[in-house]
Length: 284
Image (tube, rainbow, N blue to C red):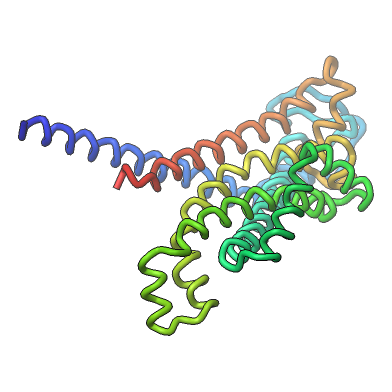
């Protein structure tokens, strides 16, 4: 019996170390993407906005590893410089909806009453519409631009975090440690910031990391439809839109930014899955 228990403990330890190694690996990949986005302008082999019609639609070669677009611009340089807009716009969007949604959810779960009813009914209105369709309508009203795309997607994405934070707050609200904190004289803001928020932050963080890939795809979708960044700014979704009419004659114009989206979304999704496994109480 003792041997079986030792084997189980050893297997759990090996599994935990494996999850840690995966977490470090995917964190390193995500950090590499962020560094590329930060130093993009220094990494571009060519000016990503310089046009040269003599080199238009050149296939991949030693001089242009990812080929050129219809204006002769180097695709590799445009993919690299496009990472700045695509990645940072996504991270800003996820940060906004996480902060706003979590704050609303905590307030609703803690206060209850009319504030809870009104805010949750508002979230129901947003959730009643298909997300991307509603974002298209909002972005269409606001006009093009990456800021308006972020506002449009933020308007329909915060209810998920509000509902999650509300449910977690309700689960913590009547716990023993909070009653003890109240008796010790802690004010409501202190209870929310020092006790509630740290205890629900893990689940919120996992949801945020898993949402990065989804938000990136939706931002790229708005740009693809002409409601994101404005030309000639490089952004992966708009680059795919520019090259779609030449998919048969110059497929690299679509494959290059499409591959960048695929790799980036894959890394952040795998990172989110690993963070979820790492923070699973069963692994502790």
